[in-house]
Length: 375
Image 1 (cartoon, rainbow, N blue to C red):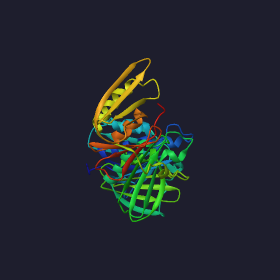
Image 2: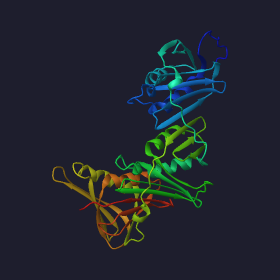
Image 3: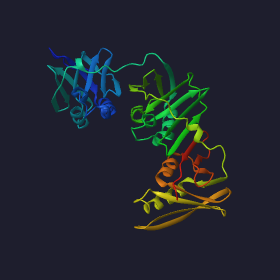
Image 4: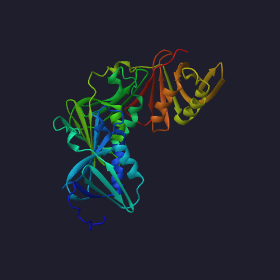
């Protein structure tokens, strides 16, 4: 970074940043910048400079994100500017260093031979991002957190009429970390022998966790702070605060079958390919696909549509128990299988009307339950 920066007079802010770091920060806050809020200032990004460096902040009152940047601060201060304008501008700049100078609520952005003036708004009315100071504080490896989220977050409900199902349920208890998500038609759960050192249970909005996965980047470790009404994630160079979903998560353990009369072991990719093709012939309906488990050691995957035609394929399998058939929503089964990172899977069935349980072989503590359809 160029250290020989002339200090301008009578300005409110003057800073110099590494362009790529500034771009990363703006990408990190982009989806939190509100575009439909009744509070116009929420359309803005807050830039705050002090002797510790520069903060880039955005909030929609549900989620608040801060990125911490280094840089050279010649004049401390703060300003808010329209987020979309700033993001689109900076994404099209090229060079090593970007200079920001604010005067009379106008932010001058210069980089190389490019310069722009963006009309801003004083930061006085920008909402304060809350900090979770009290509550439970734990640290978790990034790869562990990412693995937990990958295992369950796809199964959350999109139906806002049942808010508790629109989040992921986390429980840290008795030396184990468990996470679950359900939309009432399927359930994903992962349980790890992982002692976080503190016990808690919390429902975190799915959207919050999507932002967490985007922002945590290459952070080796994530600090999680669970407060009474809010949860905070602290990364290497950023932090995210979100509300907690209030309410009691349904006792999902009650629907996990404790026994089965049919066990089927198969290659995940082979069944995925068959299900994808079968779903072509049921797109106009409920996406229902029939799985007919044969005693000879195979799963016949079939679908039929009066408008499109019919399809069937046979997938080799290791079958233990009484042969049976069951009908599932193909997309739900595919979601679960695609979340597994193993080669083979075991499906446990207890009849046409009982939920099917999928367990990836070699990945202890994971299961995925799908409710059957009427055939």
